[in-house]
Amino acid sequence: MLVTAVGPIVYVLVLVISTNFLFLTIGNRSPLITSIGLVLALLAWIYVFKKGFETGWIRGVGIALLAIIVFIITGAVIALFIHLFVPTMPPIITTQPFQLV
Image (cartoon, rainbow, N blue to C red):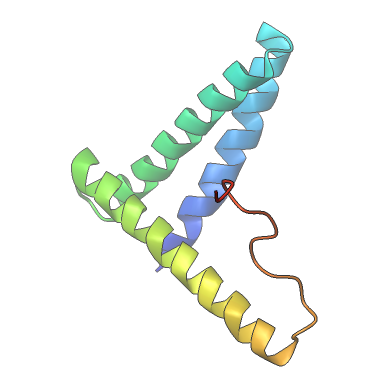
């Protein structure tokens, strides 16, 4: 469980450090900097799973994807559960992702 808890922490640290470093070296190219930072952070997170569970890169990717799916489902269930007791709370999604015709 420690590896699963450390993974997102490493992700955020690598994302913040890499985007700040790239901003200082490349300049203000926001989409490029963000994209590179996200890729580096995801690779670092997968590497944590790879080392922590002593497995290869492919299984590390699988574990990371499973962790993301579980995180999303758990967050949605907690938000819906809270919404039952606090009905005045705004919904999880405040805008529609696309216009229905």
